[in-house]
Image 1 (cartoon, rainbow, N blue to C red):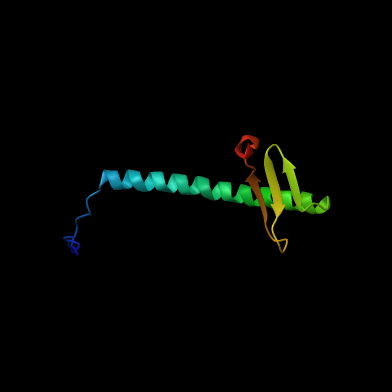
Image 2: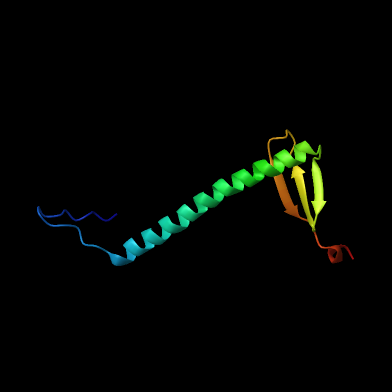
Length: 87
């Protein structure tokens, strides 16, 4: 285990440009993901509401299947296997 070198009074820690850039890249991507998570949560709630409004627990469209998971607390949309997979 390496020990952190103690700084002398009045001296600032050296700036490591690569670490600063990597941290800034991470923060940018994290913030985008967090914003997308908010949008995904809203879209999931809207889908759930539309399925409940139409009394549907499963719905197939465009090669996908929307399913309300048991208990009615979650909804999933999954890609269906292609028809040629069964030939």
